[in-house]
Structure formats: C-alpha cells, structure tokens
Image (tube, rainbow, N blue to C red):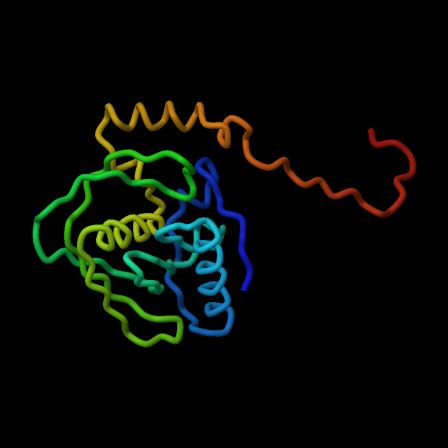
Length: 184
C-alpha cells in the first residue's frame, strides 16, 4: 500500500478509456489499496485508476463516511431527477465549478475479489459515482460544463500554478557506460 502521485489535467491517460478488469488477483487488490491510500492522502471523495496512470476500470470513493471501491462499474439511472452543484477533481486541483449530474444512480460492478457489488447513490454519492465512472471513460468533469462555464474553467486551469508550471520535470537517465567517439 503506497500513496501514488496523481496525474494532472493534460496527461493523456486521463483522456484514454480504461480497459475492463479481467483478473481479480493480488495486483488488483494492491491497486485498490494504492487508490484508497492516495485518495485519503489528498482528502478526496473518489479516485479512479487512470488518475494514478493505470488504465483499468476501478475506482475508490469516500462519501458521507462510506468508503469503498468498485471494479468494472456500470451505471443505471432510476429516474430523470438532476442536481447542480460544485464539483472538483484531484486531477484539476483547487478548482470547482457547478456541474449538472443525475440525482440518483445505481452502480453495479464487482469488489476486488470478483464478487458482485451494487451501490445505490443519491446526492453527493451519486455525483461521485458518475464523476469516477467518467474518468474510466476518459471524460473529465469540465467536459460536462455548459459552454460559458467551460471557457471559465479552461481559463482558470491555464492560469493555475500547477498547470503553468507544467508539472514535474521529466526524469532523464544517463547511461553508466562511457561514450566513445562522436556521433555524426
């Protein structure tokens, strides 16, 4: 179990649809543990595997003192009721924008051992389940904003300190072998 760095807006993995989990093994349980630790470290309401650079359909959540995870989620909406409220993302740190979501959702999937799982969410839990499932589809919450709010969100992202700095510098590895001669 290890806290992992969270990928930020602009990282291509956040725009890539995740693959379904095929094998429910020790590696998956380690991933779930890493997701939980990383989510707790950042005090997030949820964290999806792509946010750690892992292209698998799994996410964790911690909403209203209910903490858990779901693998290969499929969402069902029992009604048309909507909610509109502030939403943020650990991959777009410090920025929140009003986002329309469905008020009620049923998420069906599996736990880390492959046992069937169902989560019924309303309000904030419904928002979290939709937000994290979007991550698994390569969708960010800013994609769901109306045109005017999306322009404001993109401006705020471009002006944010974390985006302007471009994230961590790339790691350059130097060969331990001596280089001889010149390259032409």
